[in-house]
Amino acid sequence: MISAQNRLLPLSGNKFIGYFLLPLLLISCGAFKKSQRIERPKNDAGIVVNPQGSEDQPAVKIVNEGDAIVYSSVVFKGQNYRVPQHKHNFNIAVLLPFHSDKFNSKRDKRRANIMLEYYQGIKLALLHEEKLESKFTVHFYDTDNDTSQLKSILRKPEMANMDLILGPTDEMQVKIAAYFARNRKIPLLSPFTTVIDFWSNNPFVINLNPSNEMQARAFVAYFQKNHHGEKLLLVRDGSRFDKGFGAALVAECNKQKIEFSKIAYNKDIDWKNYRRRVSI
Image (cartoon, rainbow, N blue to C red; front, side, top):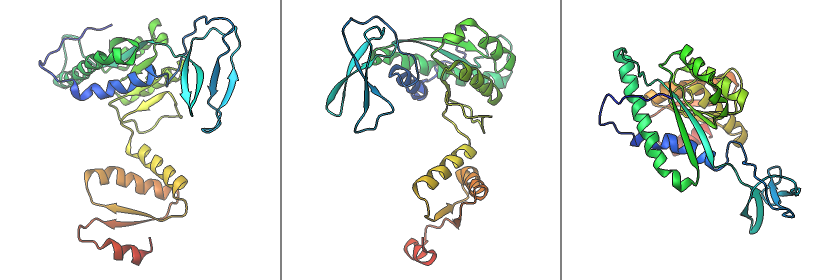
């Protein structure tokens, strides 16, 4: 575990609280994995909701008396069900470049100050721990923005027992950590890095900054599923967002042979007549 010195006081971690509260909420509500197994009383036939059931008619199954699971009562569609409780003690690994060594470049120091604000956001988020009725033990590791250092950290025995990994930052390091997380079925949250693509689908990775290309593919998939047969109109305004996401969307539509029309944004456009003219 690394203890990093705060070089720039006071810093504000308030803007980063949400980045950390989201994964805390997800793992505390059992969204990821791991039920905590404890002996339950005999002759207590629990009923659990089967995820394969429909919303209106959830499938149910009787749990054998010998199952060592703690159950809690859940109301679903006006009826009470007994469901297994998730675990309440979680270990979280934070893999960020704190640059805690003595000699760092100006760029490293600027990066370290951002990471320290994130560190403060984590500490502030942990103040909400009692409301989640769970205990979170956070382990901080300094990757020093170095691939070799990251691999050394991932080889530590305790990493296999983590319930959540936050970080790292560099794109190649995220891919290395994502491969580790997938093999060990540990969810990984990437809060900073924009990753263009992963070499395969990885259900254990949550990317808060997906690339324009990934967002474009998601948009096209949504459009095809929910607006099949309808016409797509792209309004281009030449902004930074348009040059990024807009260009990626045009490329993805061309790649998947999605027909679309383009128009330059103008506040004086008569949209009613335009729609009639192009038959949107």
